[in-house]
Length: 414
Image (cartoon, rainbow, N blue to C red; front, side, top):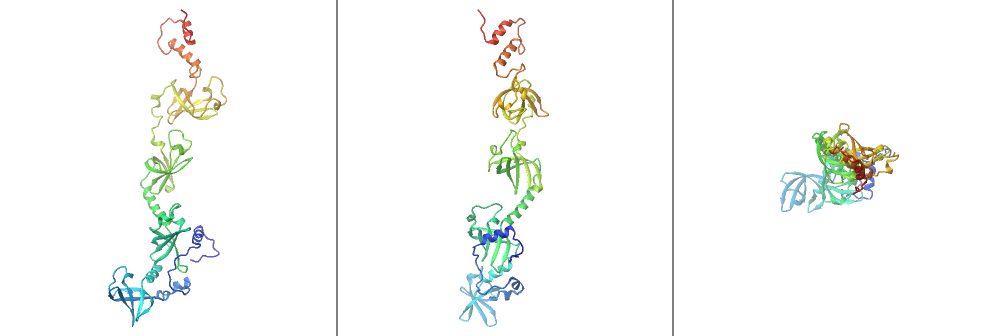
């Protein structure tokens, strides 16, 4: 594959050229003569392309020597070790010639096997290749006796930091390029893995649907959400708003890389390329039965989660927030809620209204008389209300002087 000088190189070609710079791929040809052009080699018959190759028939076996009939008055000998299994007399093979000794041609099968393999390897075919070494650009492999190269970017689906760990492994790869003139074979394992993943994705997509609960592992965490591997080559996103019933500002405060999680599938788009997940959907809804747990005028503890110009949001239970309007923060007019409240602050609030259908709670820091909850004024008012019988039955006759002294904390005169 000689590149066209007028055609711009694609990114992969440039990467391969850079990776091969200074790399000496093993030259398998023993001939010193210059190789013919690819066009000439393609047109020539097999015997002409490989003049050193001869076809022969096994005529006999003596000890470690295998005798071969190469034609009229032409015999050769080859070691039995060059065969994968003991050949049968009459079987035909191809051999390469390596000189003569005692009227017999010395034969070899290695070059013949290599030449046959060259003829069989084609662009787009799958091959098994053994990793024999590593260099800065990628991995060196062997397809049988032939040398091949696997660029670093084509080793896996993601960047591989430790290429040396592949040495000695046998990989299934796709042939990207066969350059017989330069004795170069370029491979891609990533293309094979991508094809396998496509099949896995199709199979996995057929087994999932919106509303389904899936298990997965967190692969990446960003401030806006977490990416979760749900198997079969599929990955979904749990947006920060769907991580928990509680308000979450940063996903990293809830999940971590490697964590096993459960989530509900919200949507599947673009053939599985975009999958929306929700962990929040699997948590109990704090609004369910809220009317049985809370009531108007009930005073509860809450935590300030957000502050706005119009007021503050206070969390009463995980995922259950109410609005403390600016007019309900203090007796006097409040211009800036931030001047009186802080995010994370714990404070007592009174429930003013509950609208479960609209998921709204209205809160106040003031008691019904307008005093700030927890203040001396509010405590005194409670004592007076109790004494007046608003919260408990009282005798018909009441000494107002005693009531006010009790409210002020004075002892009765004796």
